[in-house]
Image (cartoon, rainbow, N blue to C red; front, top):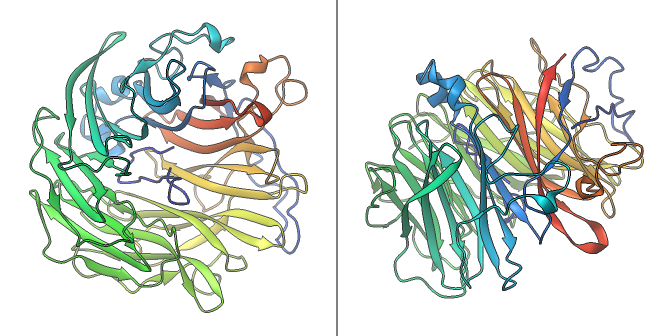
Length: 507
């Protein structure tokens, strides 16, 4: 799951990017430090019981939700509250008619209280079927979406059967989503291949898309809200080891793209539809599935993170550029470089976001003891020149593995983190914590999913119980309301569903 938020875009497929009950976790395991007894005790968030968006019908996964990003919300002032109540969700699911994967869509215009097409919160089998955007005999996967402040939603996905990059624009009018544009973005598609597309809007509503085809990273944009797209341009050379590209845009509409080619992390900037002549090598130590991700600040600063190696360790690395041409020396996130960090040098699944001109945050998980991993956040308030770090999760003996974190940031610049935590086999809960005001410290972890309907979520429908969950994605609207979607896998039945939870109040 992923949210397009100030340039943040993260996926589980390359090793990553593909709440009703508050639960305070106890002491950590092994050599990890004990969690402070008063950590976040004065702060918690009430969340709703999970709502099943995917109809309880197939193997739903790879969900995405989106709202307007924080920059556009600030710019629109009084409209922000109204626009902030719109939530859009897209995911892939098995079409029961033909057994193929299709792309499905729902939206809410009241902050997730109700959904269109209508959802029955108690019995998802009675919900109206979601909107099927692909609806064909092809295998359609990996949706990505973004939205503007005028009711338009922009979605891209890959058609693996044909090798095409599919694009749709929808206009939300009351309780109806009206299709306005549909395109195949790539030329000369190769049947049976993945393109792994990404998509983001800039502040002027221009649509930017990127994908990989034949080992080459391509870029295309639309300057008329998706009605037409410019001719695709190559932003990389050809390579047999090129992995998917990630894209972010700054306030001037300049697109920053990062991707991995073997052990190299590469960057290119596209200005007015024209890419730089030669990609820039910004890292030479990437592990397989390093998952480089990119974010941009409002002043155009570029921030990149990935998982790389150094002697005897696997670390989260970070670099930044003020001009998109010269990058800083990569910084390894470890205890001797960032105050507040710990770990055994076995980091994984790093993600990044940026806000304003100086705010930067990285999140990842790392091994801290035998059989135990924890979530860490490193935050900078000076544009990436220095960081401080902290542990966010608090694993237990029965659930020692915290992994796959994702972030969002609110209007006040506080970071919100969601992740999965379990035993590595039968249980993976969805957890949440929020940065506390005034210091880099997080509230006590809260349980969002319902692993059972007896002790944890007494009395809820068995259709809302999900002992194994994955890919939680948080978002925070302009009023501070938290929205999270996540995937579930129901044990032996292998039923996959998309669940949504929202905050009710903070106290």
